[in-house]
Image (cartoon, rainbow, N blue to C red):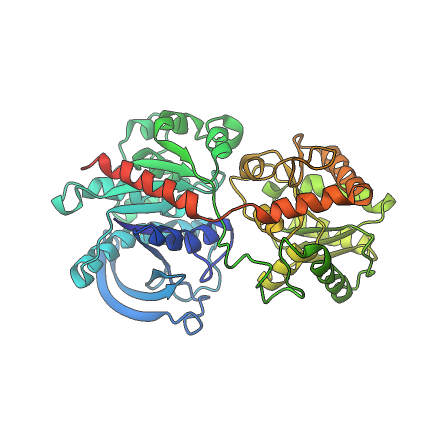
Length: 485
């Protein structure tokens, strides 16, 4: 079975959020179970073609209502998988970032959706490879299920299926009607779109026309059927509930391995972490100018600094905590200016206890996972999240809100000898809930060392590999194909 995953991001080539990790690592797991899974993304100007050995394949003209564009296709091998890249002026090839303003991203990703099908057809003619299933990801590729459905008028496309994976329901690609018309996209007359006035919403189009739909955790598949988490698409999701499945994201366990990771100061594993892990904390404290103290809990956060991630709750809680408690905080990330300012002000106010690094560094992120005692992830919603999995893998106990993939992956501490638990979980979306849970975690750190280490060991030993999830995706692909075969 041939699978073509289409997305705006794929690690390591272009990464902004967790979707890039999924698209970059899932194909490897699918290929291990005898599927032929490949990926297509835009060739952004920021992609280091020399570093990743991205090489030219072929070019072809692509004509739409508003003109003809020269499309250039490139390829690379990574993680035992084939990746294709699309370059075409003025949409892709010169930009320094993955995303731009909405008014520019809409027409360029509409173009990418159309070109993804055209590239698949060219691959069939030139290389004898053609997808059985198109796997679209988020709104940026939400038009693909409709284009596949429309193309089935051609016998060559009649048996091609489509999957739509929702990584983040809050971003939908709305109000694309004018650009869709200009690009020559046929009318979307699906009744579930028409009666809700969603015919120009790219994510809604993907949900309506895909043969099967998935989201990235079982809990989130339930949450998006309700108004709070569905952002206006709950009725559409409920109409497709029989075709919806929640499949938990995984980690590339070979890459996320503290025993071999060259980016951390001291390697360790679940059988020696009490002795070998502490040097990572001391090294990070020293390099960031924090007091080097084993007896002070270090709270780490690696995150996009946006409203979704709960820093509107976390920052007030941390102000109170640091004012009356011996603790240290390290926050790494970028995002919305207002939240960046709040985090920076926290670090300036508590200069002896807190650091804010307003950038993204994959190396420093791994070092925070390996050094922190508590990993803070107080999201308002989290479709899946991989940071909490990475934190557990590296021996940091996640402190999370009970939502989405966080609820599916973090088992709450039992408050005793840790017969159960891999972290600390709260429910209410308030600063008081964050503060109370932080105090609980710090008290446990100081008074129940054996229980703490038991949770660390249990978290490090959880199997977050893609193997089980890949089998579930393979089954979903087969069921999508059954509709047409």
